[in-house]
Length: 219
Image (tube, rainbow, N blue to C red; front, side, top):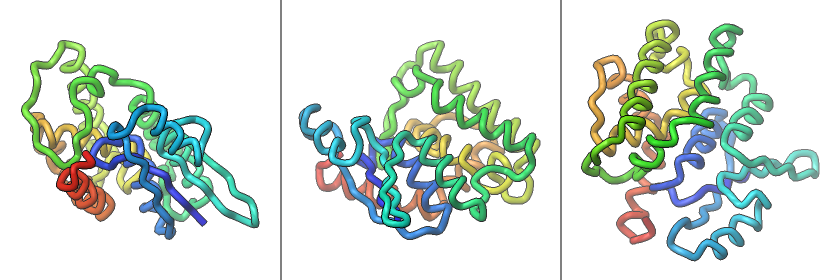
């Protein structure tokens, strides 16, 4: 029913977001990997173009009732999976929590450009923290403060941003990896939250594949 096209796992933060949401549905899926950066841009675009004209990963193909529907963009994929699998509770049930969770996800989707630039995802490695620009420091502080706010208000016994694991957590999981890679100083509640994200089976599977990419010289 599902085929997920992802990029090189050590680097592709957007692919990770869609992957975690699909894992959370409990549905089986096929996976296609497109190598990034190791080939020229035209070759990469052509490889992705076999699945979507958008030219970027991730891409989700859904086969249902004899029809194949293609969905691109991480947030669109997450929203589609939430629509198709309400039992997975990828958004909080409470409308107020759901509205805030959507705001968190959208802010991550469209924001934090300096963080992305200076602390790019390198999932399987530990790297030295570069000298951060003021804008990067401000964006890190914003993320840490927003995590603490959500955890205090909604975290509860499950300990994710809005209680149960949600799309908001999918969207911020690559940031957890960035903060881990560059050893960003965080508070105890945030450290515990990051540990819960890191321990997810999907994150551990992604880490295993990322390490293999590094060992094989793919990343």
